[in-house]
Length: 407
Image 1: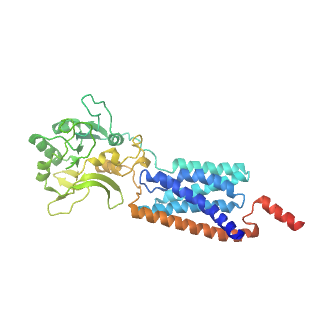
Image 2: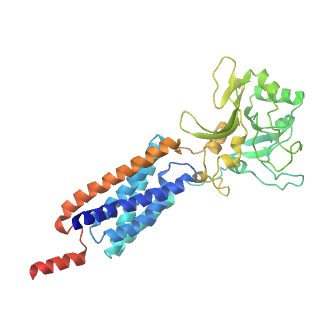
Image 3: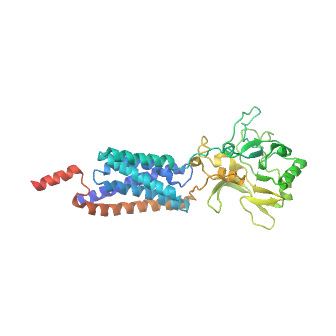
């Protein structure tokens, strides 16, 4: 009985720290839905340093074994929850971070101060420079004209104060953003790129001017929503509100665009390359006789039009987990801002992995726990065999045993 209890205690010593690391990182990843190994960076540092210090009483390799187990469980979860392998550099970074944290803690117990400081400094450097960095502004930025009835540049109301929406804050890092009220002001704005997001009704003359601007070589990104859900404190019918339905039907018909049935719910739409858009009340758009795409691309004269039947997707509630950090990709809950910038012709870092659905998350969590348990059992067998009868005793216990033998 005592032997069983001792084995169970040793097994839990190898399993529990790695499991706690997995669950702590999962809590951080769940806020955004990103299956990013760096979400487990801080949990690894905070849990594995004291774990390494504790396990070093038994054997230095025990600490490293737990560090590898915790990182492996996190990486397996990321791969299965996102249905694709994590970024290779993030995988290597988390493994090195876990080993440095566990090894640094073990070296602290052994009072090997210099190697311990080097290991912990390496862990902090990995944690500081490994994850995605906030997006910085580019020096040479083309002009981007924006026509919209959405509150992207101001607060709602007659005395609305100037305030950029998070999507505009991000676009300003790649463009010189100029809001305009009339399509006929495009020529004077100097813009060759236009973002048209749920505009107010346009006159026939304005629609003709927009069509001509595109045919002359303009690039247009158009968000037209058949069922806008953007929250507003203004009463229905107030002309300060954005239109509840799209107002560009005649122009879209002129271009041969047809709308499908509205999907009246919030959806997470994965593009073929794995990037994620979160949309609400979107309408699939297509050309006659062709299958639709997201976004729908048209060649109009010498220009190009990208169409998407949803405007709610640029509402930060659908793509940003922390409203105070729109420039930090680690705070995004969808790839929307990067995609919008790229559709407008700008370069934007991507490569994020996302948890796909509940079934994938369950599979990832279940598999990670099973793999972690197997890793702990393997460690119990190999490390105990390596250490012999003294493998799991503390130094004080070993001295007592040796004293008994000598007596």
